[in-house]
Image (cartoon, rainbow over all chains, first blue to last red; front, side, top):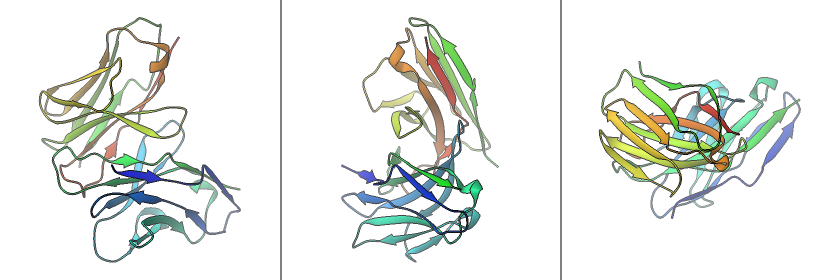
Length: 114
Length: 113
């Protein structure tokens, strides 16, 4: 079965420091990987995805993520965090092209920038 | 461009009362539609998904049901709410296929009292 793990419930950094939110996955096959952000009482917003090709994916608002197949990881990064980046971040995975394929989400990591 | 609407934004309902949450998508046709529940501001649990009109797949047994009466309309219902049904409900749509991202509505905060 597919699964996603986000090992940290909360990460705290000072403004200007790098942002890293960790994600590891377990799938039987080639994964499609996604990052979403959620602000309080709002829906999830798509940040970026890895499908194939370059392991470093760049997304919205200066975020990027690196796919590492050997470590089955897809960590989210931002070189310099802003206070406005404080939010709940979700990693998600899905598999090959099938009708109705759903995204399986991790439990989320709260990122707090002070 | 595509947009997704979900309402109401907040809802307080007594135990035993019925529930109807509605979600509609504009600007696309034949989307896959999803209902998720988020408990205590954390992880998302997939409740139902639909790949077409009248086609509903349930991921977990529960007190809820879903229907898709029109191509771009997805409804989450209950005949009698339980306290445990409280949570943040999110509707989402995506194109078919594993490589496409999902787009979420703004969510409904349901409190059962």
